[in-house]
Length: 376
Image (tube, rainbow, N blue to C red):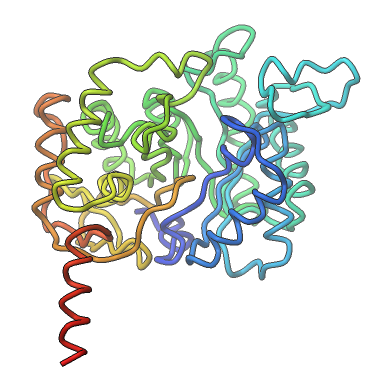
């Protein structure tokens, strides 16, 4: 991990709550439900929050801001994303992008230097805070379907505008670090050649279901360039939890049969040990060590660390995981074996396996034994 990321992503900030769901990406949630979710996350110890103007066309930022406005700013880590501006219009087309957001706005893609400065200012106003810790340039990636002339054009605008502007804002102290937040490895590889990012958001690319490209293409370069990563969407937008979708997009309900088969195999293995598969999936994204790489320890997820050169700064999820301990290594090794079977011999091997935080039959048996001992 580079020095800036190490200073920012302290142990208490290495597990985060993402804002996609509270922007009504998948289902329509009320403000009351959103507030309850954030209160629950805070009560469980979550102190890293990642949002974006794109999520609900500003809805997610407003909801997070309503909650975080009443917390001490030094008590949490906050990242948001730049490159998208909004303009109110009676004849807006928000339904073409975020139909459940009820937004009055049209979107403007702007990755220029002036555009990202305004984007940060607008986000701060919606959030009701005075600063961002990390700014990610958002969605300049081949999978983003809404650019009028393709992602390469927007990337080139960002290369000349957003990237140097964010480096300047970092040096001025307006933000603490910057990178890009994308769903594919190619843009992260490009930005490491074209600019000096500190940490990038690597979403949906390193999970129990899909990790070959990240391991083979991205992680070796990240180590070489000394750039940190935040792993997002470890559950593939809820697919590992059982949701009828895989990742994002209008056709995310068209799930490859191989992925469904793999999820069921992993679920069978997890249930054999009384484990919530969501918990194991989060651990997989945060805890694998291979070759020259390792992950930092999170107090909230029990991840151990070893001093190696590649570091994952954090993991973002919008789902809850259970919080009891269980034995260490056998489950992860079995899950790793299944991952390697489906992705070829590319998945990283676990070194010193971390503690899992689990619940299930094994703990119920232990609880009964402890209760019996207390009675005697």
